[in-house]
Each structure stands twice: as C-alpha cells, then as structure tokens.
Amino acid sequence: MSNKNGECPSPALGVGPDYRPANEKPTATVSRQVKNQPNVHILPQTPQLIALLTMIRDENTQRADFIFYSNRIIRLLVEEGLNHLPVVPHTVTSPVGKDYTGVRFEGKICGVSIMRAGESMEQGLRECCRSVRIGKILIQRNEETSLPKLFYEKLPPDIKDRWVLLLDPMLATGGSAIMAVEVLKGKGVPEERILFLNLIASPEGIANFLEKVPKVRVITAFVDQGLNDKNYIVPGLGDFGDRFYTL
Image (cartoon, rainbow, N blue to C red; front, side, top):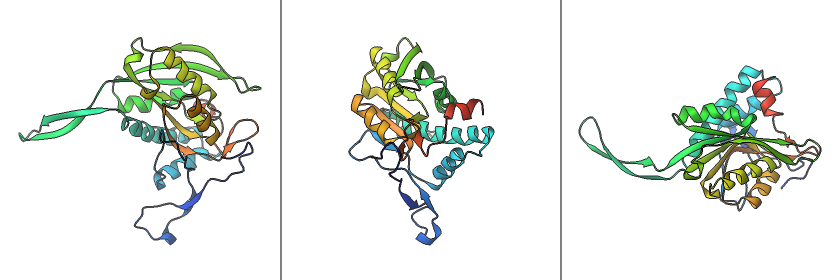
C-alpha cells in the first residue's frame, strides 16, 4: 500500500509475449497486484494494453486520440466483465447439420454509469451488448472534504432482477463508487450481482471500496501507485471527464 504522496512505486517489468527473449522485451511500468482480494480482476498487462495506457496518460495526447485509445481500453474492460456473467449449457445445430454444445448467458444485464465520466464507457458496453439498458447516477465530490453527495439517479425499474455493470473510469478514494453501490443495493440489487468496471484504480480506493462492499467484483485495467495529498491518483492521467469531453 502506498502513502498519500504515492511514494510506493509500481513494478517495472519486461513487456511482451513469453516466447520473446528478455532482451527483446522493453521495460515498462505495469499494474500493482492486489493481494488477498479475489474479487479484484486486473486485465493482463499485455504490450497492447500498456501502449494504450501510455497514450492516455500522456499530457500531450490530444482529445481525439485520448477518446480513441480510451475507447479501446473500455472495450477490453467490458469484454472481461462479460466473462464474469453466469452462463448455462446451450446446444445449437450448425449449417452443416451438426450439433455444437456451447453456452448462453443467463439472466438480464444493465449498465449504470456514474456521471459524467462514467458515461464515456456506455458506448463500449452498447457495442458488446445490443439494446442494453443503461441507468445513471450523479454523485459529486466535495473538493475540500473529498466526501461524495448523491444528486440524481435514474435506473431501470426492474434493476433488482438484473446483473449490473457499474461504470466509472477512475477509482480514487472509492467514495463515489461506494455510494453508487449503496444506491443499487437500495433498489434491491445484491452486491454479488454488481461488476464495477474502471480504467485506473488506486490501492487505497480498492481497499476502501472492498471494505465497504466486499462482494462487488472489481475489474480494472491498472492499479496505480497511490493518492497524493489532494486525493488524485498518481501518476494517473488527470481528470478523465475533462480530457474525454472538453479538453
């Protein structure tokens, strides 16, 4: 666990496929691992993912490129999130008349974005799940106290019967995400049917989040060094919503 100044460095490893020799793998900063938290799933730290993260972390990356590369990571997160949904056996007949024993998804899903940055992840979900229902929760953080406040929620009326993919690109202190989960639980959604998808998380945020809502499954692309004295993720990528929508 890093301190408030982000002084615990993330690991640096050679990045590349296993069959390449070590001298052909460039050294890059990869995600910290989270011990003793089976509900935290970090995307494989592949050269593709690290290259995409490098682009969106760069302060010189222009908005159009930031959106493009962020969308690629979001798609990876959604695809991984869908891997955690329950499936049941399902046999089909192929065009050549042979049976294939496969599976199909069981149950309904919906997305819930934490406005406004979380809305950036909605298109990636729609591209994977046609006609998916999407709800919204607006929570804003007091810049002085860092405490969240709920302003608005609009959710599918049958959300308690669905698996929920909760969307927010950054997990800093965890306060907003915890409040969003409490809103969902208040609508009857069990914790274990919530998947929280985000691009970059702090170790402090993950610890705080899972202490309060331990049954929620967290799927992230990267666990960063930590938080600074303003509760910003270090090294992070700045304000995701500003860079995606306005800068």
